[in-house]
Image 1 (cartoon, rainbow, N blue to C red):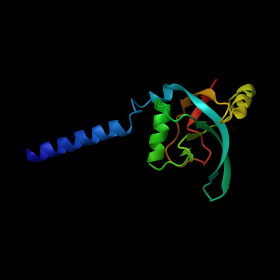
Image 2: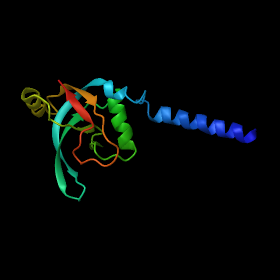
Image 3: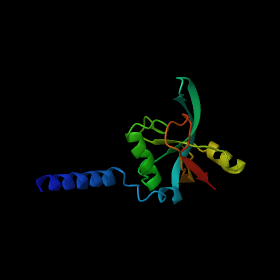
Length: 145
């Protein structure tokens, strides 16, 4: 009986810790059905590839960083546990890798023309990805037009 209470207490603690640390998890498909509007600007940054080579990645810098929707929270959660595909810049802003495939030329140009002084809003949707290693410039989000 004593061990049963201890085990139940541990299980409740673990479930609570998971819920607190991963608030954006509401179900296996909910996050992938969410479209979120974020404010920021385009940048191109250098990341380290699998072989140690330098690679240039397209990123959207989410600024101000007080934007806390489910997608942003999920990306920050993964960064906090060591995922290096996305990153936090020196100013504490989230740098989200973006993929321009499937994005119209007008939208692509609008994003590329944005800057720290000329921020824009874009809509992002979490992309379903395979577990395991992905390339340095892989994007976990899709730009929704």
